[in-house]
Image 1 (cartoon, rainbow, N blue to C red):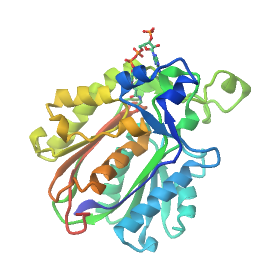
Image 2: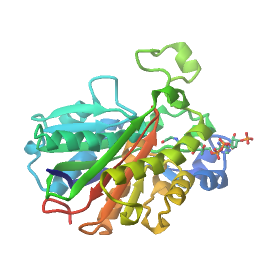
Image 3: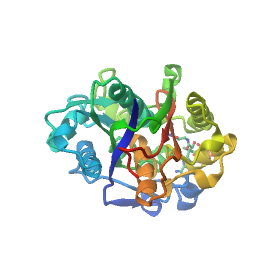
Image 4: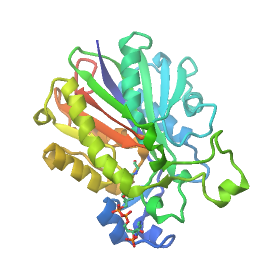
Length: 332
Ligand code: UT7
């Protein structure tokens, strides 16, 4: 049995934070940010908005796009590294906002790789027949977890959400293979040290900004330029495909230089690489559906096209999914 994408939805907050805005907050420059990251601006939520609001908006759009009865959604999975609270899950909060009370709901946390992990989990649950219609949403209000005094991190991130409605597809189409990996020995490279049960909120936590993102940027960079190509090669091999078979590479949008270095290692023509990092920055678990949706709306995806989606992030985690676009239940 094959599992395919039947509907896609996205939501981005209206408020734009430009590099010029950041120049007023920290010691940085538009030139540094553009040259080192490829980011020109990012979206940022208002104080009144939460991550389940973003998730619900993207999720409802995906259900509408799939033209299915909302009551037929039997599982909501929210992939996020910026959950609204420890519990209840953001998936439960979004489920209520979408009026999908007949469904099961849970969060999946693999930081920026969460959406790739989510696709793999959804593929397994649909293939086994446990569920028929899974709404997988990557949603982040990650700017809430940024230290706005830390120029190493605050320029990188943005908020947003993207969702796929996944269900059975025509054999040979949809998800062909996936590769997932993790190395907890390198957990220290990228983390939010406090706010969980290991170090609960306290005055000390706030004074030392331990509730915000701490990152060894160049170590993560070195890891990422290897992890992305490795993920792509392993996932393609599992599908019995080669790099020349790839029509669209949809990488996690963390840094334009990481993407270019990975693409060079893979020997993939740059025209096959989809990016929107200049507009949205690193939206963590939301970045891959946000890019794929742009290709879909632009009608750039043809029946039979091979797509490779790949990501890396805290954990460390990394992985990729190979998809053959289209199919009887597919989108084109
Ligand atoms: O989703 C996964 C999450 N994270 C990532 O993927 C991030 C991976 N890492 C990166 O993207 C890059 O390492 C960064 C963009 C974070 C940094 O770029 P870099 O080329 O590795 O710079 P660097 O950390 O080696 O820093 C070079 C210089 C330093 O100054 P000195 O020590 O040479 O004087 C930094 O202090 O750039 C300085 N710097 C900045 N300058 C202006 C760091 N951030 C900034 C900034 N504006 N925002």
